[in-house]
Image 1 (cartoon, rainbow, N blue to C red):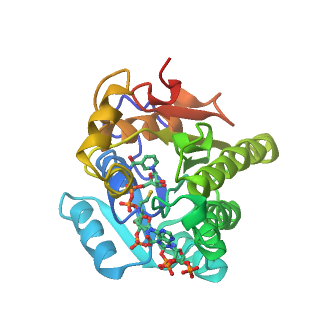
Image 2: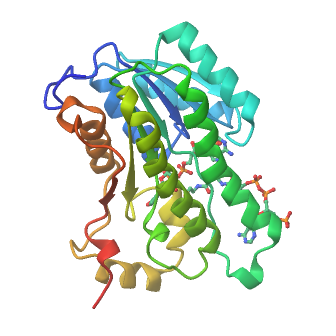
Image 3: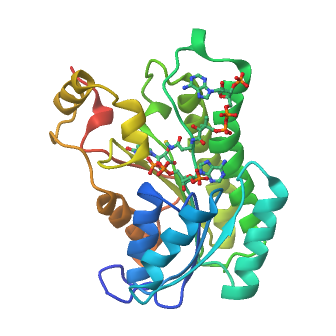
Length: 258
Ligand code: NAP
Ligand code: COA
């Protein structure tokens, strides 16, 4: 994989993005396409996928899409198999599909907890495990999207915190198991990113918004393109000796307040 400072650094590379139809993951997909990658976007809602792919194709990029649920083992397998047939061996896999809501444990049913574990953690497992068969090795790079809740206990986030903590460990275990084959496995932990569903769901009052900004050392929300820059670095040659790492990209939010 070429130097990430070059405009064509992902020319001809094949990238699969779960949860690629909106938000942070779409921002990453768009930046990867601008650097020459050919993409397959995978998530549940066809209309969102069609519109997302169009934002890439109308600027000259290549983006296929497949609709399915990351909890559905067979749907994930079929999408990755199609990606392999239509685009070729996989260079980069981004596992970013997730679901979240605020709920204290007293307001969370067993199925509510399971739903987020299944989408975030089992979904990431399904995507990474099925990807293995189609990886371009050595050189393939797998990136999962985790969150500060994984390491920072956050009220009303037992489900998401547990799921993302699982993703962090899965990242490290797979880095050990697949490293000898030249496959790198890392994760990015975005902080609160502007204009995203995730932030809208967690920061749902003006008071929370004011308090949040005070708790971020850099004093502002992040931008989708700042997460995309981190992802681009991680899948480039510049990160060729980096695996099993969780990268905070959060303006210092995870440091907490003294
Ligand atoms: P978003 O726009 O809602 O993105 C979620 C994506 O996942 C959508 O494409 C959604 O499409 C897809 N998805 C959800 N459930 C799915 C399922 N069961 N199967 C397949 N696809 C599914 O949210 P976002 O805020 O940008 O979050 C993107 C990622 O960043 C997530 O992993 C999130 O945990 C992480 N993150 C976000 C923030 C933030 O500030 N926003 C902070 C830390 C981490 P469909 O609903 O159509 O399936
Ligand atoms: N508080 C407490 N429980 C909730 C809840 C909330 N706000 N929202 C959903 N649940 C519970 C439901 O009550 C249900 O449990 P039950 O069967 O015991 O009643 C369980 O979660 C599953 O809900 P359902 O709506 O069937 O799940 P789904 O698979 O259709 O959708 C969600 C998954 C709930 C995560 C949905 O919000 C979603 O699709 N989100 C994707 C977008 C997103 O969250 N983006 C931000 C990414 S960080």
